[in-house]
Image (cartoon, rainbow, N blue to C red; front, top):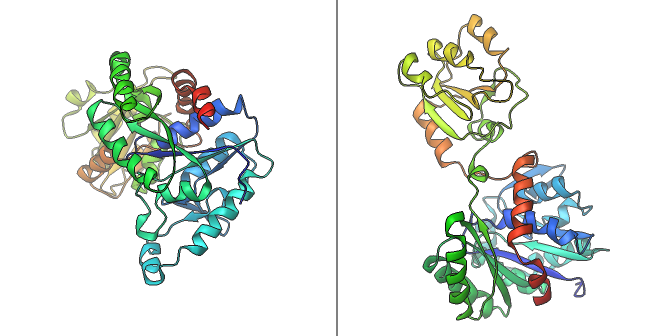
Length: 363
């Protein structure tokens, strides 16, 4: 396997701590120093099918944003189906998996100046099939960076647990990136975490301030999550949902909540609310985020005709209003290739708040 191309393994203390966000920003920052960047997510658990290959969603994101010119199947060598773990336990042979990851890395690293390797969850994820993140980093010959959420005590405790598993596998952790820190506490937390990590022999490489906009789902992501039908072919599926209003009130009371970024969730037979919301035109760029009609209740033809001509998206979901509101609340917001505003913010955050030169010097 290629041992000469510089590489780094981006790990995390838990799922959804900001590993992909950090990786997305780091590729842009690293490109200023190493123009030809390769990317690999050796083990993925959420995938889409492209041609005959299962490809991890984060890999698709990176390739769409950066046009990495690497084979998609090599950037995502192990995209695991739900049955994979059970089948593996029956055979328990990791050698083919190791060989597949090594071969994929060689293809990704071909004619590249640097390769960013993204893990999957905390250091122990994948242990059940002998491919923990720590072991994968060892297989790739990569040093690791751990991403964790803001705070002082909890992130240091969680970093220490993950660090121990990397150490056991013989992988050097070169630093930590703290994510989602309240801007007004940035300097205070950075100071204490830096000192706390130093006592553990670890460097703080960056502190990323919390950005609420990155937590807002788009209407497109809700459409996918709810398996909803689009009733009006709006051009604004990337509208961000900042707040949710459930239409369980009179029209007069509901109108007080109609403002930019609001998602209205209401049964499809509440035509009074639907028509009232359809008239909310604050200006060309500031309207409701969208409407989700629930219960599989399709409005009358006359109302549908009106909905087809409003600018913001109207979706029809089969779930009832409670189920839809619960799914929206519990949705894990992932950055999508067409989230241009979010991607711009992520690049800027990493460029301003992560010491990329210190990271590279540690490699």
